[in-house]
Length: 367
Image: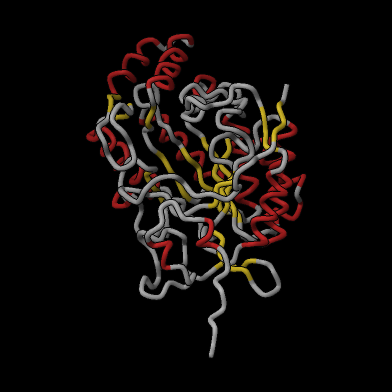
């Protein structure tokens, strides 16, 4: 039974990561459900492994209305990110309807937004449910394809089959949407080079323009769930290879000791291989979180690469317009750090940003 609840705090908030080794640009995260309230049941899911994760399916019924209220107050808005802790297009009617209402709010205000999903059918449903989305220029899509079809029932058992996800990539690409394919986490020892090559080939053939990947990081619970899923599916030898490929990590950026991730030498080899193969196929590449920007394709404005991923400013008419060459990745890509086009030099220092930083500034008083 779906539990409906009201979101008490702010809708718009940034990633909680500090600036040390941070790769994520400023984003306006929009939570549709509590962490872990997702039907896909991916065994390695970090959100389901949080101590505060909600096992029962639930959603915040007032998200769209609160988002509209907050956008009315802002002068500057980073791209919206729907929804970072659960799939916004998972096969739950109420969750998809809430996502559609949030998308309608974003379109009404003209703000850029970004959806990550493993639901091919959900993407096609959303295009039908919100026809204006097909003409809206300020959004982009990331579809996660973390395994080839024969292995996907282990890694995302309740998500859309891979071929449905590729249909969604193709449909959006043909409609002119900037589409990213994410292959993370590539669970090394279960996933191999030939699997990644298959995904890259299919992504390029379907119209994806950018690839994001990582070998992933886990806590003890999510890693134990992953190994158990591999054993249950009969992949015992692969489970042992996975166990050997990953080890507790030391403090590195916002990661803490005890985090389980691949050894650095393996990560370097993986990202070198992935970038070469993605660029060979005419796509750009970025490593997610676990490596620095030097591992990404040159020339991309931020790790998501989408040209729509820019800060937006409210116009006198009340809608937002994208700022030119201002990609909300203030640590690395401010066009003019001495006089930022957003008028918010605080964003060069605030990680995460304060909501008050996005509000209009009082007019100067003249004597």
